Image (cartoon, rainbow, N blue to C red; front, side, top):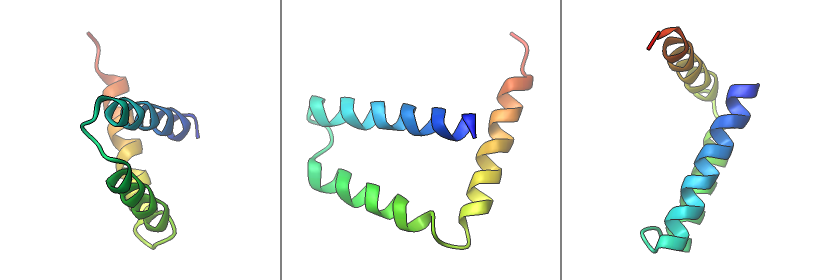
Length: 64
């Protein structure tokens, strides 16, 4: 759950910066948000969540 909240906050910050910087227009941002919202209610959502969890675990195991 903590990874999910962190990822959402990070992506929100990126979208806000892109909107303010002019590299992302409001209508495409809305379309991408709605796409993500509706994608979350499909059958592929658990696979996406598992993939991101695996990537987060892999990054966590790297020692710098």
